[in-house]
Amino acid sequence: MEFKIATPGLRLGDNPTVRLDVDNEPQPDAVLLIDSQHGGQTCLSDDGYILGAPEFVAEIAASTATINLRDKKRVYRRNGVKEYLVWQVMNRRIDWFSLQEEEYISLLPDAEGIIRSRVFPGLWLAVSALLEGDMSSALAKLAEEDRHSSSRIKQ
Image (tube, rainbow, N blue to C red):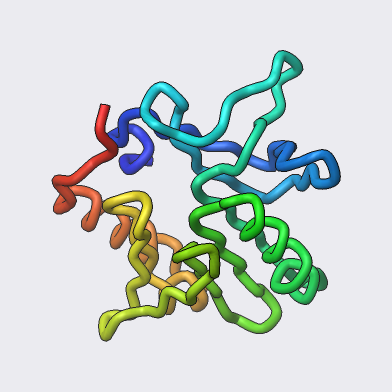
């Protein structure tokens, strides 16, 4: 993805094990994290697990929406995950939360149906296109916004 390539210090994890604390080792569907050399809050263990809270966690939920929106959301908030996205496939809904003063607030789509990350400049999601299954439009919008975003993670 253009966004990943153009963002210094960004790492993408697909279904990784994340050691948040002694009681919680979730395997979210996807994570974005900033390399610790670029100011991120995670590192990799000797055995290849993510230690600490990724900056962004995404869960795709069918039958697990209640768990993702209650239990996992509390764990992620308590451990400092800065943004948390839950795509409720069956309900055709996307909830994107941003950690503000130790509480999650919902990020809502603007008039164009776009939700913008507060952590990763240029990471924008065309919610209606994604929910309608129009992946090419959703990805085109991400690439379009990526080209317009001049602010990136500081090296």
